[in-house]
Image (cartoon, rainbow, N blue to C red; front, side, top):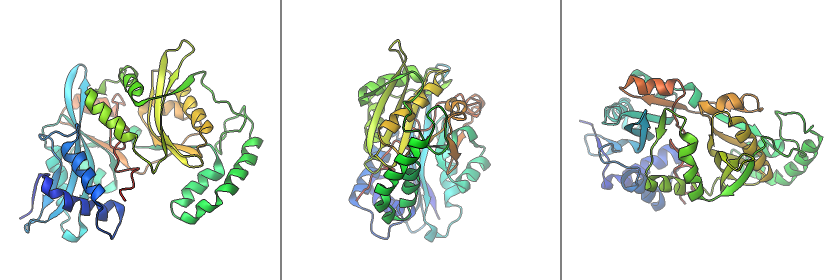
Length: 371
């Protein structure tokens, strides 16, 4: 008879093979680098807790047919200390022919000792399972946002993900973007790009900083949230170091955005490669400063040669995004579950800090080649 139990070190090779088939779509065996990282991420990292463990689904023969990766996130709500659990990689081997394996894994995970459970990568089926188990989808946290900067390079980057040969057209795209952006009026916002003459708006001074300086800005720039992270120094250093190691996305940029007085009113973390769509992992802004901080980010990425920007929404940023020619898509849902009604209401009302560093996309399962 099948069972769900905590992940063990001996399970990692089988979990790596399952991950390879499910998410990397590879026929080749899982590389040793992937095995090593899954062991670190789900067993040894400072964001692991043996009381809130990753889980495997084991069939009667002893084979692993499913897995859910779990990391912990210390949080606070109105000075109350909490343990949140982030549900990452949820996968089931279709060859096991067990349609209930995913539901068993999720039910066991949600019945754990954590105060609140999250995922920011739930597909339609997973979202349905969460809601059936008294979880909820969070629409304001479930959108990806897109801002075009260089229209030809933007479209070429999208095409190159399906057709690698499209990258050969990069010189043509650069030339065409030069023509198009010179023709754009600098005093008008455009859906199709950022004018070449644009100097950026917001009245803020953007300074590139290091990982340690960025870490010091997180607490003061998230203090306004009723439900907020409470990382230890070791945990935050680990998250930021991992977020910096995404060579598939390009160079890591940590930056502060300061008012004329020199006081920081925002910060952002993104990955950029000239001519490609930059990946925004985190935007932080004080209340009332989301618009200028977004303008500063767009302006900085434009100077860095980005074709566009892509990131994940938070409710605190959404209103400012609506007036800045930003488009939205919904590739996955952010879902939450808690037995505490006050915690559920905080997130349903947009009063929680989640996604980005307080989520899943900081880890190297996205952005690292694992060759």
